[in-house]
Image: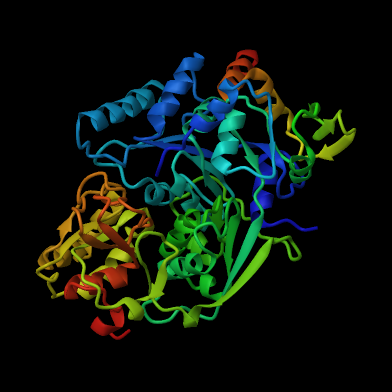
Length: 422
Length: 103
């Protein structure tokens, strides 16, 4: 029996020739990650053991991105714990304000993660790195603490589900729309604890930024991980970034999938996930006209340069609707600077958007754009749970940057085709 | 983001439950149970078969549940050596402490 890409990565990291779904392994970790919410707990647990050194100062990554720039005293205290720990252990990858970006955009951009890696992070959207052909999953702070010391994690090998996207994405449909569509089809528990493997001609043609958006939201279908086998787009992306030797894994013909879904990408319109679950998806044309108060473009899902370029195509020479508060937050400093050089930031400011420093803030209702009672946001982020972005009686609609930017102009949910015929 | 709850497995431990056998577990519960040293196994057949008052023996290495009352045996995915040690040490961080002290 052949193995899937996921099984191969886990087997190689566990010193085993073969693994099967359901098997428990004790695996070597290439990179482990914590942020300003999860790392302080891990650091405390680690310190309690009395162990004086982390397993490898180049493989422990700390990214204070959630409540930074620190919004209050509590969050400042949290960040301080990371800062002291990073200094004490000479961590190579600690990102202070001015260098920090949203973790799941930052790590691939900085070449910290790459093809064939096994990555754990104390953050549920750690699954993002699967877009590079890595096995990457979210864990708890205790797992992270143990990994700080040992460089290892115990894992249960997940079953894999194969998603084949035939054809080619059309018009304004993006990776975000493919993943929203998929979650709409299988539900928020449709891939529970499984590895979602995305393949097919539409995926081959998909730019990396779109692939990151897809794998980022694997967790929103309950999955343990999302993964896309490396190809020429992956190679191009990691060139000049990823300094370690990439290991390229591919699923064997005849490997075992617990199920296979086949979709035709050309039949998928831009999607909108209605409140309050990512599975409540509808094609944008079916929900157009719904009035909104705030449009948010950014996050670890859709805060990358190509997302900002798409938004700018709509906003160029236009203004956000007077009733709309438009918040745009580039995911990293590098993306921010690139957007500045390309004139995108000027376009956004001219469109009367506020452009924020890289932070997770608005996405999780942390800071930098909280919703009041009864308000409605249209957002390119990944979760629309009750109260996620603010008041429990506020509502969140999820979409792609194209839908968000088009809707910011009209003040209501709008198909991108209505603004620009692509 | 978010934090993973740890309360539930602690309640089982506080109630002096020595092991839990069930058809399946939520991933977070499973990880947290192992990480605090509470032995926990997925075995649908055993969960179906075992009755209140049965005397049960679990062999971690072999991945076997023996019901002394009914004399039936059930198989589950065995744990690698390190996971057995985590349970024996009383949790992940105790295991880490022991292991790193030896190295």
